[in-house]
Length: 96
Image (cartoon, rainbow, N blue to C red; front, side):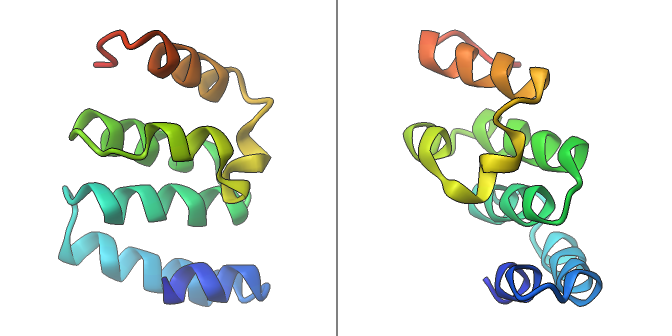
């Protein structure tokens, strides 16, 4: 959450450093992955954001509804990969 706050405050490099630290500590934890998706989205790193979101959802994260509305993910809304991911989530199909 600190990384998220740093990126929101335009301290992007420092926020990404914190995010990398969290990823090293808990690389498979769904909540960490979801938060990393938000951080990368806000930092202008859409590929990293979507990859983390995909992994979070594939690990059974219960953030499917939230991800459709989370303003931190707004920069991804027009990205074809994100659009496809949300379509798969909405349809309830297996993602991966």
